[in-house]
Image (cartoon, rainbow, N blue to C red; front, side):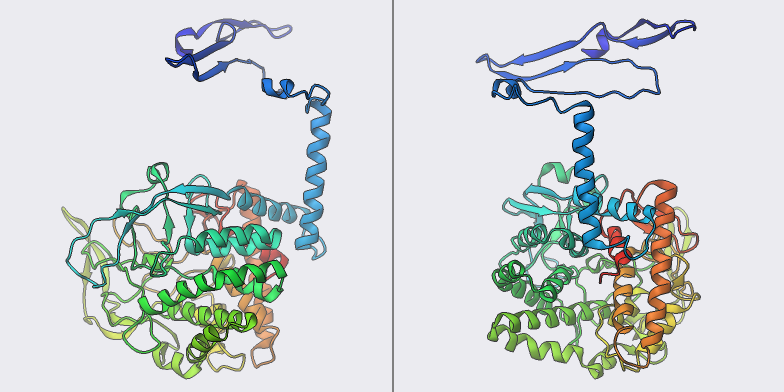
Length: 562
Protein backbone atom coordinates (compact mmCIF):
# COMPACT_ATOMS: atom_id res chain seq x y z
CA UNK A 1 0.00 0.00 0.00
CA UNK A 2 2.79 2.39 0.91
CA UNK A 3 4.98 1.38 -2.01
CA UNK A 4 2.23 2.00 -4.56
CA UNK A 5 1.77 5.59 -3.36
CA UNK A 6 5.38 6.68 -2.94
CA UNK A 7 6.67 9.18 -5.48
CA UNK A 8 9.74 11.35 -5.82
CA UNK A 9 8.29 14.65 -7.06
CA UNK A 10 8.28 16.30 -3.64
CA UNK A 11 10.66 19.20 -3.27
CA UNK A 12 12.23 20.94 -0.31
CA UNK A 13 13.72 24.38 -0.86
CA UNK A 14 16.11 25.42 1.97
CA UNK A 15 16.39 29.22 2.35
CA UNK A 16 18.86 30.59 -0.19
CA UNK A 17 19.57 27.17 -1.73
CA UNK A 18 18.36 25.15 -4.69
CA UNK A 19 15.43 22.74 -4.23
CA UNK A 20 16.07 19.12 -3.22
CA UNK A 21 13.84 16.24 -4.33
CA UNK A 22 12.78 13.54 -1.90
CA UNK A 23 10.63 10.43 -1.80
CA UNK A 24 7.31 10.85 -0.07
CA UNK A 25 3.63 10.11 0.42
CA UNK A 26 0.87 12.44 -0.73
CA UNK A 27 -0.74 13.04 2.69
CA UNK A 28 -1.59 10.44 5.30
CA UNK A 29 -2.72 6.87 4.60
CA UNK A 30 -5.37 5.10 6.62
CA UNK A 31 -6.30 1.46 6.34
CA UNK A 32 -8.90 -0.54 8.20
CA UNK A 33 -9.80 -4.19 7.88
CA UNK A 34 -13.39 -5.03 8.75
CA UNK A 35 -14.36 -8.62 9.41
CA UNK A 36 -17.62 -10.23 8.19
CA UNK A 37 -19.51 -9.03 11.26
CA UNK A 38 -18.39 -5.48 10.67
CA UNK A 39 -15.98 -5.61 13.60
CA UNK A 40 -12.59 -4.01 12.97
CA UNK A 41 -9.85 -6.66 12.70
CA UNK A 42 -7.07 -4.13 12.60
CA UNK A 43 -6.16 -0.69 11.41
CA UNK A 44 -3.21 1.54 10.80
CA UNK A 45 -2.47 5.15 10.02
CA UNK A 46 0.66 6.24 8.20
CA UNK A 47 1.86 9.82 8.41
CA UNK A 48 5.17 10.85 6.87
CA UNK A 49 7.11 13.73 8.37
CA UNK A 50 10.10 14.89 6.30
CA UNK A 51 12.70 16.94 8.12
CA UNK A 52 16.14 18.33 7.42
CA UNK A 53 18.63 17.23 10.07
CA UNK A 54 19.75 18.30 12.59
CA UNK A 55 16.25 18.62 14.06
CA UNK A 56 14.43 17.82 17.27
CA UNK A 57 10.80 16.79 17.13
CA UNK A 58 8.28 15.55 19.66
CA UNK A 59 5.33 13.30 18.83
CA UNK A 60 2.31 13.11 21.09
CA UNK A 61 -0.14 10.24 20.64
CA UNK A 62 -3.39 10.28 22.57
CA UNK A 63 -6.01 7.60 22.11
CA UNK A 64 -9.64 8.67 21.80
CA UNK A 65 -10.33 7.07 25.18
CA UNK A 66 -8.03 9.59 26.86
CA UNK A 67 -10.49 12.36 26.05
CA UNK A 68 -13.62 10.20 26.22
CA UNK A 69 -12.76 9.21 29.79
CA UNK A 70 -13.43 12.71 31.02
CA UNK A 71 -9.75 13.58 31.40
CA UNK A 72 -9.99 16.79 29.38
CA UNK A 73 -8.69 18.74 32.38
CA UNK A 74 -5.36 16.88 32.38
CA UNK A 75 -2.59 18.89 30.76
CA UNK A 76 -0.96 17.28 27.74
CA UNK A 77 2.25 15.50 28.75
CA UNK A 78 4.43 17.26 26.19
CA UNK A 79 6.99 20.03 25.85
CA UNK A 80 8.40 21.41 29.08
CA UNK A 81 5.88 19.45 31.17
CA UNK A 82 7.22 16.16 29.81
CA UNK A 83 10.82 17.36 30.22
CA UNK A 84 10.19 18.21 33.87
CA UNK A 85 8.41 14.91 34.57
CA UNK A 86 11.24 12.91 33.00
CA UNK A 87 13.90 14.87 34.90
CA UNK A 88 12.02 14.40 38.16
CA UNK A 89 11.95 10.60 37.63
CA UNK A 90 15.61 10.58 36.54
CA UNK A 91 16.64 12.52 39.64
CA UNK A 92 14.66 10.13 41.85
CA UNK A 93 16.44 7.22 40.17
CA UNK A 94 19.89 8.79 40.68
CA UNK A 95 19.19 9.43 44.37
CA UNK A 96 17.95 5.90 44.98
CA UNK A 97 20.87 4.49 42.97
CA UNK A 98 23.45 6.32 45.10
CA UNK A 99 21.68 5.36 48.32
CA UNK A 100 21.72 1.70 47.21
CA UNK A 101 25.20 1.35 45.71
CA UNK A 102 27.13 4.39 47.08
CA UNK A 103 29.42 4.69 44.05
CA UNK A 104 29.92 8.44 44.47
CA UNK A 105 30.74 7.95 48.14
CA UNK A 106 33.30 5.28 47.17
CA UNK A 107 35.06 7.78 44.90
CA UNK A 108 34.01 6.47 41.50
CA UNK A 109 33.95 9.05 38.70
CA UNK A 110 30.70 10.45 37.30
CA UNK A 111 31.34 8.42 34.13
CA UNK A 112 31.71 5.19 36.10
CA UNK A 113 28.51 6.03 37.96
CA UNK A 114 26.75 6.37 34.60
CA UNK A 115 28.15 2.96 33.61
CA UNK A 116 26.70 1.46 36.81
CA UNK A 117 23.32 3.07 36.14
CA UNK A 118 23.33 1.74 32.56
CA UNK A 119 24.27 -1.77 33.78
CA UNK A 120 21.37 -1.83 36.23
CA UNK A 121 18.88 -0.25 33.81
CA UNK A 122 19.71 -2.64 30.99
CA UNK A 123 19.35 -5.66 33.28
CA UNK A 124 16.01 -4.44 34.69
CA UNK A 125 14.82 -3.56 31.19
CA UNK A 126 15.49 -7.14 30.11
CA UNK A 127 13.16 -8.64 32.71
CA UNK A 128 10.19 -10.18 30.93
CA UNK A 129 7.22 -12.45 31.37
CA UNK A 130 7.25 -15.54 29.17
CA UNK A 131 4.60 -18.19 28.72
CA UNK A 132 4.47 -21.34 26.64
CA UNK A 133 5.55 -24.93 26.21
CA UNK A 134 9.12 -26.16 26.11
CA UNK A 135 10.46 -29.22 24.29
CA UNK A 136 11.87 -31.78 26.72
CA UNK A 137 13.50 -35.17 26.27
CA UNK A 138 12.40 -37.15 29.34
CA UNK A 139 14.76 -39.13 31.55
CA UNK A 140 14.33 -42.84 30.79
CA UNK A 141 16.67 -43.76 33.61
CA UNK A 142 19.36 -45.57 31.58
CA UNK A 143 22.44 -43.51 30.72
CA UNK A 144 23.71 -44.07 27.20
CA UNK A 145 20.65 -46.15 26.31
CA UNK A 146 19.99 -46.66 22.61
CA UNK A 147 16.27 -46.63 23.32
CA UNK A 148 14.72 -43.91 21.19
CA UNK A 149 12.42 -41.47 22.92
CA UNK A 150 10.92 -38.48 21.16
CA UNK A 151 10.99 -35.02 22.76
CA UNK A 152 7.65 -33.97 24.21
CA UNK A 153 6.06 -30.58 24.71
CA UNK A 154 5.83 -29.93 28.44
CA UNK A 155 2.62 -28.31 29.75
CA UNK A 156 2.58 -24.52 29.32
CA UNK A 157 4.31 -22.61 32.10
CA UNK A 158 4.86 -18.95 33.00
CA UNK A 159 8.31 -17.53 33.66
CA UNK A 160 9.17 -14.10 35.02
CA UNK A 161 12.89 -13.68 34.53
CA UNK A 162 15.78 -11.49 33.46
CA UNK A 163 17.61 -12.42 30.24
CA UNK A 164 21.31 -12.33 29.26
CA UNK A 165 20.75 -10.16 26.19
CA UNK A 166 17.43 -8.72 25.01
CA UNK A 167 18.39 -8.86 21.36
CA UNK A 168 20.48 -12.04 21.21
CA UNK A 169 19.35 -14.26 24.11
CA UNK A 170 15.78 -13.08 24.84
CA UNK A 171 14.84 -15.98 27.16
CA UNK A 172 15.59 -17.45 30.56
CA UNK A 173 18.89 -19.25 31.27
CA UNK A 174 19.10 -21.05 34.60
CA UNK A 175 22.69 -20.45 35.65
CA UNK A 176 22.71 -16.90 34.29
CA UNK A 177 19.65 -16.04 36.36
CA UNK A 178 21.37 -16.62 39.71
CA UNK A 179 23.95 -13.98 38.75
CA UNK A 180 21.27 -11.62 37.39
CA UNK A 181 19.36 -11.73 40.66
CA UNK A 182 22.44 -10.84 42.71
CA UNK A 183 22.19 -7.40 41.11
CA UNK A 184 18.38 -7.17 40.98
CA UNK A 185 17.87 -8.05 44.66
CA UNK A 186 20.03 -5.12 45.80
CA UNK A 187 17.68 -2.80 43.92
CA UNK A 188 14.31 -4.46 44.53
CA UNK A 189 14.18 -7.67 46.62
CA UNK A 190 10.52 -8.24 45.69
CA UNK A 191 11.49 -8.65 42.01
CA UNK A 192 13.99 -11.34 42.99
CA UNK A 193 11.43 -13.19 45.08
CA UNK A 194 9.06 -13.12 42.10
CA UNK A 195 11.71 -14.39 39.68
CA UNK A 196 12.99 -17.15 41.99
CA UNK A 197 9.41 -18.24 42.65
CA UNK A 198 8.78 -18.58 38.92
CA UNK A 199 11.99 -20.54 38.33
CA UNK A 200 11.17 -22.92 41.19
CA UNK A 201 7.73 -23.27 39.64
CA UNK A 202 9.41 -25.00 36.68
CA UNK A 203 10.42 -28.05 38.76
CA UNK A 204 9.24 -31.34 37.34
CA UNK A 205 8.21 -34.27 39.56
CA UNK A 206 11.86 -35.37 39.91
CA UNK A 207 13.16 -31.96 40.95
CA UNK A 208 14.71 -31.05 37.59
CA UNK A 209 14.68 -27.56 36.03
CA UNK A 210 15.67 -27.12 32.36
CA UNK A 211 18.74 -24.98 31.84
CA UNK A 212 17.36 -22.96 28.92
CA UNK A 213 13.71 -21.92 28.84
CA UNK A 214 12.53 -21.75 25.24
CA UNK A 215 8.81 -21.29 25.79
CA UNK A 216 6.42 -21.15 22.84
CA UNK A 217 6.67 -21.01 19.07
CA UNK A 218 8.01 -17.45 18.95
CA UNK A 219 10.89 -18.31 21.29
CA UNK A 220 11.66 -21.53 19.38
CA UNK A 221 11.90 -19.60 16.10
CA UNK A 222 14.93 -17.75 17.53
CA UNK A 223 16.94 -20.81 18.60
CA UNK A 224 19.12 -23.13 16.47
CA UNK A 225 17.56 -26.63 16.28
CA UNK A 226 20.39 -28.36 18.15
CA UNK A 227 19.65 -26.27 21.28
CA UNK A 228 15.85 -26.53 21.25
CA UNK A 229 15.37 -29.74 23.23
CA UNK A 230 16.10 -29.69 26.98
CA UNK A 231 17.18 -33.05 28.37
CA UNK A 232 15.83 -34.06 31.77
CA UNK A 233 19.14 -35.68 32.76
CA UNK A 234 21.20 -32.53 32.20
CA UNK A 235 21.87 -30.20 35.10
CA UNK A 236 23.20 -26.65 35.31
CA UNK A 237 25.10 -24.85 38.10
CA UNK A 238 22.63 -24.09 40.94
CA UNK A 239 23.40 -20.37 41.01
CA UNK A 240 19.90 -19.48 42.24
CA UNK A 241 21.38 -20.40 45.63
CA UNK A 242 23.67 -17.33 45.43
CA UNK A 243 20.78 -14.83 45.86
CA UNK A 244 19.23 -17.25 48.39
CA UNK A 245 22.46 -17.06 50.44
CA UNK A 246 22.32 -13.26 50.25
CA UNK A 247 18.69 -13.27 51.46
CA UNK A 248 19.75 -15.38 54.42
CA UNK A 249 22.60 -12.99 55.18
CA UNK A 250 20.43 -9.85 55.07
CA UNK A 251 17.57 -11.43 57.02
CA UNK A 252 14.73 -9.31 55.60
CA UNK A 253 11.44 -10.67 57.05
CA UNK A 254 9.76 -10.74 53.60
CA UNK A 255 12.70 -12.70 52.18
CA UNK A 256 12.63 -15.17 55.06
CA UNK A 257 8.86 -15.67 54.65
CA UNK A 258 9.48 -16.39 50.96
CA UNK A 259 12.32 -18.81 51.74
CA UNK A 260 10.11 -20.72 54.17
CA UNK A 261 7.67 -21.37 51.32
CA UNK A 262 10.48 -22.04 48.84
CA UNK A 263 12.48 -24.48 50.97
CA UNK A 264 10.66 -27.69 49.88
CA UNK A 265 11.30 -26.87 46.22
CA UNK A 266 14.90 -25.75 46.82
CA UNK A 267 15.46 -29.01 48.69
CA UNK A 268 13.90 -31.10 45.88
CA UNK A 269 16.00 -29.29 43.26
CA UNK A 270 19.21 -29.75 45.22
CA UNK A 271 18.44 -33.42 45.97
CA UNK A 272 17.90 -34.10 42.26
CA UNK A 273 21.26 -32.46 41.45
CA UNK A 274 23.13 -34.34 44.18
CA UNK A 275 21.67 -37.73 43.21
CA UNK A 276 21.41 -37.48 39.41
CA UNK A 277 24.93 -36.13 38.87
CA UNK A 278 26.69 -38.48 41.30
CA UNK A 279 30.16 -39.56 40.18
CA UNK A 280 32.00 -42.88 40.25
CA UNK A 281 33.21 -42.48 43.86
CA UNK A 282 31.44 -41.28 47.02
CA UNK A 283 31.32 -37.46 47.15
CA UNK A 284 32.38 -37.18 43.51
CA UNK A 285 30.16 -35.71 40.80
CA UNK A 286 30.01 -35.81 37.02
CA UNK A 287 28.12 -33.56 34.61
CA UNK A 288 25.78 -35.67 32.50
CA UNK A 289 25.44 -34.56 28.89
CA UNK A 290 28.94 -34.11 27.52
CA UNK A 291 29.05 -34.15 23.74
CA UNK A 292 30.02 -37.48 22.18
CA UNK A 293 33.65 -37.80 21.04
CA UNK A 294 33.05 -36.88 17.40
CA UNK A 295 36.03 -36.87 15.03
CA UNK A 296 35.47 -33.17 14.31
CA UNK A 297 35.71 -31.99 17.96
CA UNK A 298 38.99 -31.11 19.63
CA UNK A 299 37.45 -31.60 23.09
CA UNK A 300 33.79 -32.69 23.49
CA UNK A 301 31.82 -29.85 25.08
CA UNK A 302 30.14 -29.93 28.50
CA UNK A 303 27.22 -27.54 27.93
CA UNK A 304 25.43 -28.42 31.20
CA UNK A 305 28.38 -27.03 33.20
CA UNK A 306 27.76 -23.57 31.75
CA UNK A 307 31.42 -23.46 30.71
CA UNK A 308 30.63 -25.04 27.31
CA UNK A 309 33.99 -25.66 25.57
CA UNK A 310 36.20 -25.43 28.67
CA UNK A 311 38.59 -28.41 28.26
CA UNK A 312 37.65 -31.56 30.17
CA UNK A 313 38.97 -35.13 29.87
CA UNK A 314 39.79 -35.70 26.20
CA UNK A 315 37.80 -38.97 26.09
CA UNK A 316 34.41 -38.71 27.88
CA UNK A 317 33.67 -41.61 30.22
CA UNK A 318 31.74 -42.54 33.36
CA UNK A 319 35.03 -42.38 35.32
CA UNK A 320 35.10 -38.58 35.19
CA UNK A 321 35.07 -36.46 38.33
CA UNK A 322 34.23 -32.79 37.75
CA UNK A 323 35.70 -30.35 40.25
CA UNK A 324 33.36 -27.42 39.55
CA UNK A 325 30.25 -29.57 39.98
CA UNK A 326 31.47 -30.94 43.30
CA UNK A 327 32.04 -27.37 44.50
CA UNK A 328 28.54 -26.31 43.40
CA UNK A 329 27.03 -29.26 45.29
CA UNK A 330 29.12 -28.36 48.36
CA UNK A 331 27.86 -24.77 48.18
CA UNK A 332 24.26 -25.99 47.82
CA UNK A 333 24.51 -28.30 50.82
CA UNK A 334 26.04 -25.48 52.90
CA UNK A 335 23.42 -22.85 51.96
CA UNK A 336 20.42 -25.15 52.41
CA UNK A 337 21.71 -26.50 55.74
CA UNK A 338 22.04 -22.94 57.04
CA UNK A 339 18.61 -22.05 55.68
CA UNK A 340 16.97 -25.12 57.25
CA UNK A 341 18.63 -24.39 60.60
CA UNK A 342 17.56 -20.75 60.46
CA UNK A 343 13.96 -21.73 59.71
CA UNK A 344 13.93 -24.47 62.35
CA UNK A 345 13.43 -27.21 59.73
CA UNK A 346 15.28 -29.85 61.76
CA UNK A 347 14.62 -32.75 59.38
CA UNK A 348 16.17 -31.03 56.35
CA UNK A 349 19.08 -29.75 58.44
CA UNK A 350 19.73 -33.25 59.80
CA UNK A 351 19.75 -34.66 56.25
CA UNK A 352 21.94 -32.02 54.59
CA UNK A 353 24.22 -31.02 57.48
CA UNK A 354 26.41 -34.17 57.38
CA UNK A 355 26.61 -33.97 53.56
CA UNK A 356 27.73 -30.34 53.77
CA UNK A 357 30.37 -31.22 56.36
CA UNK A 358 31.67 -34.14 54.27
CA UNK A 359 31.86 -32.03 51.10
CA UNK A 360 33.71 -29.23 52.88
CA UNK A 361 36.22 -31.60 54.49
CA UNK A 362 39.65 -30.75 53.09
CA UNK A 363 40.78 -34.42 53.04
CA UNK A 364 37.89 -35.49 50.80
CA UNK A 365 38.44 -32.65 48.33
CA UNK A 366 42.18 -33.37 48.25
CA UNK A 367 41.68 -37.08 47.75
CA UNK A 368 39.38 -36.67 44.77
CA UNK A 369 40.70 -33.51 43.08
CA UNK A 370 44.16 -32.38 44.22
CA UNK A 371 46.65 -33.15 41.44
CA UNK A 372 50.15 -33.19 43.00
CA UNK A 373 51.81 -33.37 39.58
CA UNK A 374 49.98 -30.18 38.52
CA UNK A 375 50.07 -28.41 41.88
CA UNK A 376 46.38 -27.47 41.65
CA UNK A 377 42.87 -28.89 41.95
CA UNK A 378 41.65 -30.52 38.73
CA UNK A 379 39.08 -32.71 37.00
CA UNK A 380 39.85 -36.42 36.68
CA UNK A 381 39.13 -38.68 33.71
CA UNK A 382 40.35 -40.59 30.67
CA UNK A 383 42.66 -37.99 29.20
CA UNK A 384 45.60 -37.16 26.99
CA UNK A 385 47.04 -33.77 26.05
CA UNK A 386 48.12 -35.20 22.68
CA UNK A 387 45.04 -34.12 20.73
CA UNK A 388 44.86 -31.55 17.95
CA UNK A 389 42.77 -30.58 14.95
CA UNK A 390 44.45 -31.21 11.61
CA UNK A 391 43.17 -30.53 8.07
CA UNK A 392 42.06 -33.70 6.28
CA UNK A 393 40.37 -33.02 2.92
CA UNK A 394 37.55 -33.30 2.12
CA UNK A 395 36.31 -33.58 5.74
CA UNK A 396 38.05 -30.39 6.84
CA UNK A 397 39.55 -30.23 10.35
CA UNK A 398 39.64 -33.61 12.10
CA UNK A 399 40.79 -34.56 15.60
CA UNK A 400 44.04 -36.50 15.70
CA UNK A 401 45.09 -38.31 18.89
CA UNK A 402 48.81 -38.88 19.28
CA UNK A 403 50.97 -40.28 22.05
CA UNK A 404 50.71 -40.70 24.96
CA UNK A 405 47.38 -42.47 24.53
CA UNK A 406 44.56 -41.47 26.92
CA UNK A 407 44.69 -42.85 30.44
CA UNK A 408 42.94 -42.20 33.74
CA UNK A 409 44.58 -39.10 35.18
CA UNK A 410 44.03 -35.55 36.35
CA UNK A 411 43.12 -33.21 33.51
CA UNK A 412 45.77 -30.59 32.81
CA UNK A 413 43.51 -27.63 31.96
CA UNK A 414 44.48 -24.74 34.21
CA UNK A 415 41.72 -22.12 34.33
CA UNK A 416 38.42 -21.20 35.95
CA UNK A 417 37.62 -24.79 36.95
CA UNK A 418 40.92 -25.04 38.88
CA UNK A 419 39.85 -22.08 41.05
CA UNK A 420 36.40 -23.32 42.10
CA UNK A 421 37.29 -24.26 45.71
CA UNK A 422 38.53 -20.67 46.05
CA UNK A 423 35.73 -19.04 44.02
CA UNK A 424 32.98 -20.60 46.18
CA UNK A 425 34.95 -19.94 49.40
CA UNK A 426 35.14 -23.62 50.34
CA UNK A 427 38.74 -23.47 51.63
CA UNK A 428 39.68 -22.64 55.19
CA UNK A 429 41.72 -19.39 55.36
CA UNK A 430 44.61 -21.43 56.80
CA UNK A 431 44.43 -24.07 54.03
CA UNK A 432 47.76 -25.05 52.48
CA UNK A 433 45.97 -25.11 49.09
CA UNK A 434 45.03 -21.42 49.18
CA UNK A 435 48.56 -20.20 48.43
CA UNK A 436 49.03 -22.23 45.21
CA UNK A 437 45.63 -21.10 43.93
CA UNK A 438 46.53 -17.46 44.56
CA UNK A 439 49.84 -18.10 42.77
CA UNK A 440 48.21 -19.26 39.53
CA UNK A 441 45.51 -16.59 39.78
CA UNK A 442 48.13 -13.84 40.04
CA UNK A 443 50.52 -15.21 37.40
CA UNK A 444 50.30 -13.50 33.99
CA UNK A 445 51.64 -16.68 32.36
CA UNK A 446 48.49 -18.38 33.59
CA UNK A 447 45.27 -16.53 34.54
CA UNK A 448 46.12 -12.90 35.31
CA UNK A 449 45.60 -10.33 32.56
CA UNK A 450 45.38 -6.51 32.68
CA UNK A 451 41.63 -6.87 31.94
CA UNK A 452 40.61 -9.55 34.44
CA UNK A 453 41.16 -13.27 34.98
CA UNK A 454 41.25 -15.24 31.75
CA UNK A 455 39.08 -18.36 31.54
CA UNK A 456 41.94 -20.65 30.50
CA UNK A 457 45.64 -20.27 31.25
CA UNK A 458 47.75 -18.73 28.51
CA UNK A 459 50.09 -21.66 29.18
CA UNK A 460 47.44 -24.26 28.26
CA UNK A 461 47.66 -26.17 24.98
CA UNK A 462 43.92 -25.46 24.54
CA UNK A 463 44.33 -21.68 25.01
CA UNK A 464 42.62 -19.81 22.16
CA UNK A 465 42.05 -23.04 20.23
CA UNK A 466 38.97 -23.66 18.09
CA UNK A 467 36.87 -26.66 19.13
CA UNK A 468 35.97 -27.47 15.54
CA UNK A 469 36.22 -25.93 12.10
CA UNK A 470 33.04 -23.93 12.74
CA UNK A 471 33.33 -23.42 16.50
CA UNK A 472 35.68 -20.63 17.67
CA UNK A 473 37.04 -20.58 21.26
CA UNK A 474 34.53 -19.45 23.89
CA UNK A 475 35.74 -20.31 27.43
CA UNK A 476 39.35 -20.74 26.32
CA UNK A 477 41.01 -17.52 27.37
CA UNK A 478 38.38 -14.77 27.25
CA UNK A 479 37.58 -12.76 30.41
CA UNK A 480 34.06 -13.40 31.76
CA UNK A 481 32.47 -11.09 34.31
CA UNK A 482 30.50 -13.70 36.28
CA UNK A 483 33.57 -15.71 37.28
CA UNK A 484 35.65 -12.57 37.85
CA UNK A 485 32.90 -11.38 40.21
CA UNK A 486 33.10 -14.69 42.13
CA UNK A 487 36.90 -14.27 42.27
CA UNK A 488 36.59 -10.72 43.59
CA UNK A 489 34.13 -11.90 46.24
CA UNK A 490 36.47 -14.72 47.28
CA UNK A 491 39.54 -12.44 47.46
CA UNK A 492 37.54 -9.90 49.47
CA UNK A 493 36.38 -12.74 51.77
CA UNK A 494 39.87 -14.14 52.42
CA UNK A 495 41.26 -10.61 52.67
CA UNK A 496 39.04 -10.06 55.71
CA UNK A 497 39.80 -13.37 57.47
CA UNK A 498 42.85 -13.96 59.61
CA UNK A 499 45.29 -16.31 57.96
CA UNK A 500 48.65 -16.51 56.22
CA UNK A 501 47.19 -15.23 52.92
CA UNK A 502 45.04 -12.36 54.25
CA UNK A 503 47.22 -9.45 53.09
CA UNK A 504 47.91 -10.99 49.70
CA UNK A 505 44.24 -11.73 49.05
CA UNK A 506 43.31 -8.14 49.95
CA UNK A 507 45.99 -6.73 47.65
CA UNK A 508 44.94 -8.99 44.75
CA UNK A 509 41.31 -7.94 45.28
CA UNK A 510 42.18 -4.28 44.84
CA UNK A 511 44.26 -4.92 41.72
CA UNK A 512 41.77 -7.28 40.07
CA UNK A 513 38.87 -4.93 40.78
CA UNK A 514 40.76 -2.03 39.17
CA UNK A 515 41.54 -4.18 36.10
CA UNK A 516 38.01 -5.52 35.60
CA UNK A 517 36.10 -2.30 36.29
CA UNK A 518 38.62 -0.19 34.35
CA UNK A 519 38.37 -2.32 31.25
CA UNK A 520 34.57 -2.61 31.21
CA UNK A 521 34.42 1.18 31.64
CA UNK A 522 36.90 1.83 28.79
CA UNK A 523 35.01 -0.52 26.46
CA UNK A 524 31.72 1.12 27.42
CA UNK A 525 33.20 4.54 26.64
CA UNK A 526 34.53 3.31 23.29
CA UNK A 527 31.49 1.32 22.10
CA UNK A 528 28.49 2.24 24.25
CA UNK A 529 27.95 -1.44 25.12
CA UNK A 530 28.40 -3.99 27.84
CA UNK A 531 29.76 -7.15 26.18
CA UNK A 532 29.34 -10.88 26.70
CA UNK A 533 33.09 -11.37 27.25
CA UNK A 534 36.32 -9.42 26.93
CA UNK A 535 39.61 -10.23 25.23
CA UNK A 536 42.43 -11.12 27.61
CA UNK A 537 44.89 -9.75 25.03
CA UNK A 538 43.65 -6.22 24.44
CA UNK A 539 40.50 -5.93 26.56
CA UNK A 540 38.12 -5.35 23.65
CA UNK A 541 34.51 -6.45 24.00
CA UNK A 542 33.69 -9.76 22.30
CA UNK A 543 30.70 -12.04 21.77
CA UNK A 544 27.24 -10.54 21.66
CA UNK A 545 26.21 -7.04 22.69
CA UNK A 546 24.43 -5.46 24.38
CA UNK A 547 24.91 -8.09 27.11
CA UNK A 548 23.23 -6.72 30.23
CA UNK A 549 23.07 -10.14 31.88
CA UNK A 550 25.88 -11.09 34.23
CA UNK A 551 28.18 -8.40 32.80
CA UNK A 552 25.98 -6.08 34.92
CA UNK A 553 27.86 -7.53 37.91
CA UNK A 554 30.42 -4.80 37.15
CA UNK A 555 28.06 -2.61 39.22
CA UNK A 556 28.47 -4.81 42.32
CA UNK A 557 32.23 -4.94 41.73
CA UNK A 558 32.29 -1.13 41.71
CA UNK A 559 30.20 -1.09 44.89
CA UNK A 560 32.44 -3.80 46.45
CA UNK A 561 29.25 -5.64 47.31
CA UNK A 562 29.85 -9.38 47.35
